[in-house]
Image (cartoon, rainbow, N blue to C red; front, top):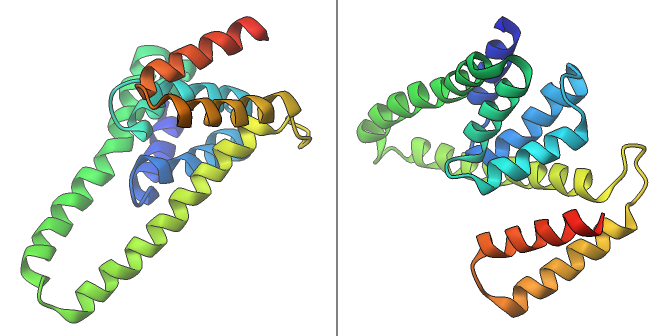
Length: 176
């Protein structure tokens, strides 16, 4: 359990930019480094975390903790993921209120924004790769067709994203 808490403290500390940036860290730690989860299990967890209310990183921490250590793991992983962000937010708020007119501070924030976009894109690419590729790295043609078809349908439908995800999940479950 200690290792789980330490890993999510690390993820919470370095997931600059929010939940989407945490995805690549979760992938690196839980799948590649520690082998606690398979890539397929992580994609399933992320899909569920995306559909449930709340930030994706916090939801993912809860699901990962639950899958590894039950309720106590879910609580520990969630608190560990959120704690660094809470502390850092409080510190930055105090600094920002004093340094808003400082040119160096504004430049630093601008650079951080660009870095955050890069980390978020990286997380999105991890999800895309895990969704469209087999574990051996080969392309899953059926998944590519489902993605293209789903995107095309969603662009035409313009309905509720939640209803669309439920419909696509149902279609995929019965066509597999």
